[in-house]
Length: 287
Image (cartoon, rainbow, N blue to C red):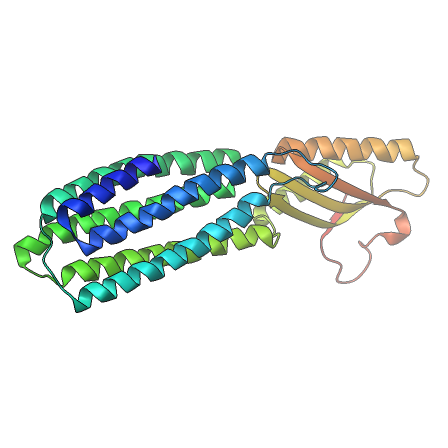
């Protein structure tokens, strides 16, 4: 899809010789590279856990999203350089209207593709697909601005508008790149899920943990579609191991009913390690 869009945008520039449309075409080259990288990241992240990667390969998507963000920023700097050159050597586009219309048709294709990528990213909890969708969608907004701006050049005779539009494309790309890196870094740094989801899991543990005395130190993170959950579970000293195991199984089943795919680690502890009677204890769920 990105190759088709690139072909159309290159044709738009060849027809018009507009610096702004050239900038948009250069940005689309990055889309092609991003599409290839996204396919690799999604395929690699889908690999099952192995001896060298016991927690799976899901973070490959976050790594690629960061790399893509860096490439986006570098592309923005190249486009800014082009805008600066064109500002010093202003010339009128040769056929701005045909070029703008061709570019707009590529924008329509990009819009459909961006919506598909974002929907797939949300459905499969894929950071790589979501980032790719956001990247392509930013290109759509740029295409709309270019359509209006390039069409105005022959009407208003504002030749400086062409390099100004190139600069706009660069700033739009730059903003997208920083946003992609920021969102991806949260996954790489194991940022906690939303508080309301953590609270829901805590309530689930309380409801499903009947027979235990307390749960505390609940921690959660997510890698792609897989959640990692760990906490300590206090049980009565006289409780048999088999009974504690049954409680843990019940809790794990209940958590997976809420989160879906989950890797759950429960550390069972005796009564004297309970925190409910300790002043200032936080993260304590009394059964």
